[in-house]
Each structure stands twice: as C-alpha cells, then as structure tokens.
Length: 243
Image 1 (cartoon, rainbow, N blue to C red):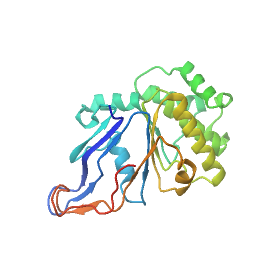
Image 2: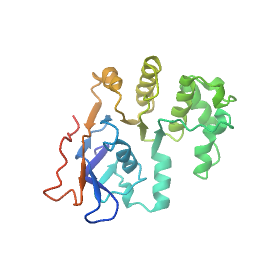
Image 3: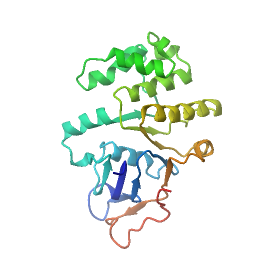
C-alpha cells in the first residue's frame, strides 16, 4: 500500500464559477519507507497541499490518501482524532507558549485530545532527543536549537505515522539548518515516521540530495482561473511528478 496518494487533487478558492481560482496538484503515489520533499516558490501551493494532507482543507476535486485513510471522508470529530493520532506538525514558527515550561508545552497535545498528559512518554521523547534536562525551562531560556528539538518532541509525542514540516529551516543560519536536517532524518529513522517537508530552501536538496528514500514533488504555477482544472483549458504548466 502506498504511504501517500494524490489523485487528481484540486482545491478551489472562492465560489464555483467564473471567478473561482483553482489550485491543482500533480498525481503522486509515495511508496512505503519513503519521504517527500515539496519544492516550489512561495505561493506555489506547498502549504495548501500540507493542509489538504492534514484534513484542514477539503479538496474540491480528487482525493488525498494518507496510509490508506482519506481524511476528507471522515466526520469532523473523526478527522480531529485521526489528525491527533497520526500526524505530527513542525511549523515554521514553533508556537511554544512562553508562559509554560517545556513539560507543560508538551502536555498540551494530550490535553487538546482530551487525554491525561503522558509524562512518561514526554520523558522518553525528550531523552531520545537529548533534551531531557530542559523540562522545567520556559521557551525564552532555550537556544534556537533546543527550541527546535522541543517542537520536534511535540510532533512525536503520540507516535505519529507522518510528520508534516512547513519551511522548517527558513529562519535558520547554515549551522542550525544542518543540525535541524540531521535531527529530522535521524528522528525519521528512529521512530519510523514518514517526513513530508515543504520548503523552497535549496540547502535541503544539497544536504539530502543523495538520500535514496527521499522523493520530490515540484510545484510550479499550478493556478487556473474560472474553470474546473479537469477542463481541457485549465492545464497547469510546469508541474512535475515526484521522482
């Protein structure tokens, strides 16, 4: 079974009709034990595609399959439960609550899911990432690299099947970028998760260019205005299949 499938996927902005703007994505079938790098300039649809994968947006046409699950077909409550159990997120801005300690920040995903915080699991993940001594610190007392590890720990807490990362290196210098990429790759191997990373940062390709498990999907100008993307005149030039 493919890890991730994009099948004639399209997203519509605005009302259906002449004023609608469509965003279309190439078809993709990602094999098991693989990872995906989404490339493209700002505005090419990378973040929208992550939101479709996470079930935060609903396709206008086509489908997304995540390890055999089609999020758009789930009820709202089932989709929330699936997202919390199967997806980990590493946003560009780490969104750590400044008033809470590291341990309390990592308790929030459990609380949001209506669960009692699993302090043993928090200890395990922090230890695996080498930051178990930081539990009582607040975000202002963390270095950039430590904060990045805390955000990754938060993404791993519930043993997700996928980690979705949106521009995880965009605001990092070269040294911090290299450390973050090494951490992501090590974490993917240790926890058997599929990485889906959206970025226009060329340093990722430079660092991971020889990684056989990494597949790529390049998005280029996939907009069509005023017609369904299945119509003959709505071809999106420049898109490329994963390779």
